[in-house]
Image (tube, rainbow, N blue to C red):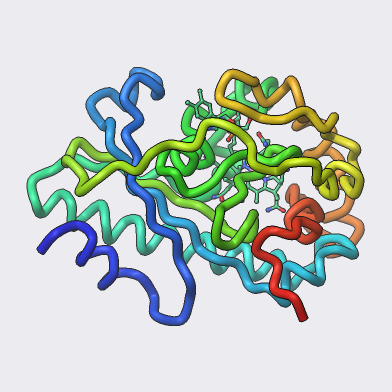
Length: 234
Ligand code: B12
């Protein structure tokens, strides 16, 4: 059975998924050495829940986020196991990271050593928007991502996307409650911090999450809710 057939079998029937294949050679830190190929999965989020967070994060969004993380992790681990059975090495990059697993360097930079968004642009699934979200061609930013890296040669690696396709739209910039973005276009040579302030975003998201549903997490997502790409017109 080839990888594509395998993925189709593993994906839940009741959700929409994006599937992409990327070649990340030369883009990852030493610890991922040899694991140059990536399968990127993007799970479409519930439109009704995302539309509602235009008024701020809420407990329903938090529960959805938690469930989708579990679903993505389960699919990714099954895929990684299946690749191992075919003789390849594989490693799951979890959909989310927990504060207790992180070091000082992370809190000083808000940079993890693996970016799902980078894997997704390399897989040709979309680009990075003006508030640093990954914008998929199909569902816009309304996706959560997970990646499996492997040394197993993948069926094909799509043409990567190297620059923003947001055009003149700046809805996410104008609506950001943290005013974290300056409107500059992304391309692969522009560092995140040149157009987006992750600390402003995180601080505001923590305040809003605590105020609205009493949890010490960093959820906001207004930039997801306002983006016109992938939004279902009602
Ligand atoms: C740290 C982190 C945060 C930090 C910093 C956010 C940031 N933008 O960097 C804080 C706490 C602020 C945060 C907030 C949120 N986060 Co967050 N977060 C992460 C995490 C754990 C790591 C991201 C990281 O290390 N960033 C460092 C920078 C440098 O990398 P990056 O932003 O990922 O990608 C940049 C580069 O890779 C580069 N790039 C892209 N392609 C290419 C190609 C090449 C060749 C090169 C050289 C570079 C390059 O461009 C990107 C943008 O600058 C990821 C999970 C993961 N492991 O990826 C989730 C993740 C980015 N978060 C996510 C989400 C949804 C959120 C929130 C909406 C919270 C929420 N759920 O309500 C907000 C939105 C913030 C925003 N507008 O970006 C999703 C994004 C989904 C999407 N559609 O984009 C992710 C991918 C989790 C997931 N499993 O889906 N987050």
